[in-house]
Image (cartoon, rainbow, N blue to C red):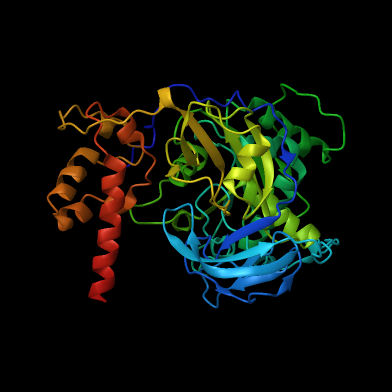
Length: 461
């Protein structure tokens, strides 16, 4: 299972539509809807009640569990509802609704807080936890948990993921260009939190401007200076926290930004089957997450907004927007001129790993990287055919699984064989389904199998 040279090159990455469009801040919404679970792990409980006045940045939901991340009010206003409402994953969950109203409390002003050099690792982890930061590449795993490896796991390196290999999405690309200093600041804070002495920022080579901007910032130490691209090779530097910092240009392919693939590409290490990045001495974080960490430390600002790419042939104006968590999809898309007449499908995320949603009346959550709208001519429904044993799915799988056999075992409900063939290692990247000439819904089968196995293990406890 150790073949990480695999992967695919999707037909057209479709990044040109937004790659050169600077991030614009969406005006404050009049209403936000905040599902109480926006992270992998445990759900939160509301700390407020209907009728309460809340201010921007106030913690309004939290959990006593370790694998959880609190939620903060993205706007000032009044809590008008706490009830089950639809979320982007397709089911109802408890959510807090805040209306700004005419007499909303004054918005929060975030004052300067700390410096990385002044903080101990435990303090950094506490700040990150209290800010409600999760992985902003789409996984939404609580960041403080990743920054709390067991004592026996020595972390020697952190990798900041700037690959953004999913087609259409350019949010991270723009973050690297526009928030370069904060990407590096957050990276140094993450490294200090886990005791790593090496920072690698991995960026696909189709983002040369971002690579050069990062190199420039490392050489000059301030993004306030005029930026001029350079062909010089990046020089390893020592930060003020005595951490080695380097930029690695990586081959453009999908899914280069997958955690296991990125570790293999940058360090040549392979995460064992069933293992985690920390098993090979690495912590991986997204560039947007690094910026959120920087804001929490420097400003005391919790995670209340994020950059979202709005794109696709079904929208009138593709763009990158900084939006408050809880803003409705409809409000965001209308800000760009709305939908075209031939708009047919809305996906939260990219075309490979995103979730198709059935309504525009859904809120942005911490895991929302993109709103992708496809036109009628791009959306086709296929009837699944029988496997022809061509082996394309095996050649494409970046983890080295055998998707064709796995699908057969799942259809037969042979759960022992499904587990034996490592379905748990599937990262649901969609490479197998993309290349399958029989249009077999492979990823859907694997998701079903994972849920089934989890349910069986829970029953057996």
